Amino acid sequence: MKGPGSSPLGTSRTGEENKGRVLLVDDQPELLEIMGHELRDAGFSVETASDGNEALARIRSRPPEVVVADVEMPVMNGYELCRRVRAAGHDEIPFLFCSGLGAPGAQLEGLQAGADDYILKPARPDELILKLRRQVERVRKLRAASRASGAPLNAAELSAIEGRIRSGVGVVQLGRFEVRGILGRGSMGTVFRAWDVKLERWVAIKTVRAGTGMSGFWDDDLVRRLVSEAAMVARFNHPHVVAVYDVQDAADAAYFVMEFVEGASLQELLRNARRLGPEQVVPLLGALASALAAAHATNLLHRDVKPGNVLLGRDGAIKLTDFGIASFVASRMHGGVFGTPGYIPPEALRGEAVDQRGDLFALGAIACRCLTGRPAFEGGTPADILTNTMNARMPNLRESGGQIPHELEAIVAGLLERDPKERIADAALLAGELSRMSAFWGWKWTMPALSGSGSASPEAASDVPHAQVFATMRARTHEGG
Picture 1 (tube, rainbow, N blue to C red):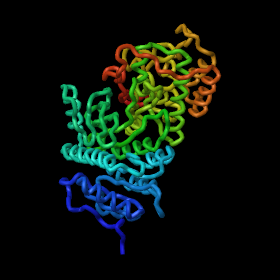
Picture 2 (picture 1 turned 120 degrees about the horizontal axis):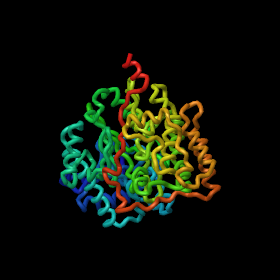
Picture 3 (picture 1 turned 60 degrees about the vertical axis):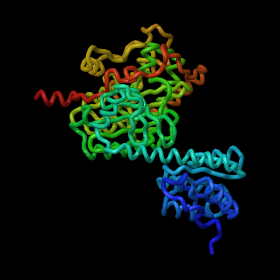
Picture 4 (picture 1 turned 30 degrees about the vertical axis):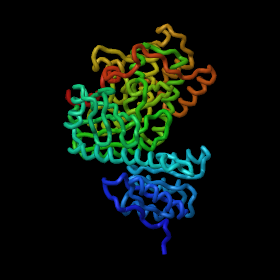
């Protein structure tokens, strides 16, 4: 016969009429009885479970709007229960711990397990009720936003969202996200600043649309690769890689939901500062090299390393973004190459296979741009830039007037070798060498002040020139007979 800790309590109010459906999980029947009656009196519908397995069964049967669980329970503790709830895909259910374990480590472990809040026992009824009401309101607001999104995602819808934001509409709904502004524009789509209603945090949403020069090679296989690449990047846990939270796809469009970095792109910084000294460039390159090393270790190439894809946080963060996006586009190229002029390696322009050394060539071009204030390969048109990439020698770094250590000059020259066989090829070794240089000279990255407001405008954040598709030299030769 089951005790009071296993029976439903306060189920007279159902659906949207009550203050919310709450699942209480605790191995102490008397506490479940007391908390259940308090919440029922406050208008909640309450179910209880005396252990983790029973709680999982109730969640599978009818997911609650909020879970409140103890930490110390036999068989399965609260941390494990929370992890299993999240692993089962129930990210939409707020999870609160109510425990007598008050040590900071216990609370941190709870949050790391996926909990939304941690309340110490004995919990004040008014505090618990207030927090539960807030969580239920958030869940219902998210549910309403999901219903309001209506039509399935497509390129026309994403284009319409951009148009509405440009026309001055304050907030546009995109699933569970409230789109609030435009961070940048590129050749494949737009980057929005958005508020995640569910997790209550700012995110960046990067769209990729078939109508922006990609319709010629957009198909179901491309979408599947997009999702696969996003999943690979999402598994990264690297301090210098922008986290990918989600990806949504449809027949002619897709979008990435990514970590929002409050600050500016390296491109914007260089537009303001023109150039950077070695004391800034070496730590910057070291961070980017470590990000590339982590990606290359999983056989993931970036393929569009450039200042516009380097995000610099006001807190000193250095983040490389857009992993995977250029890769899946490049995978569809036949007789063409995708990238940004001035950062595409010569072997790609020749129609040869590109490996991790292509990313390192682009890193060298970034280094040259930072140190000299000028692109490594210049030209009046994209075609001129590509031609100079194939034929021109690396600019003399010392002609810029800066004091550049010979060791750094040698590294940049090694990165910009036209022949990939002669080029620096190991990002991990490069990151280690740059870290050693920084430690020897006492150099640490600090975010320089930006002129004006310092907030990235759509123009400042866009790619100049944009990443786009170009014919390789081999393809042009074939076309010419």
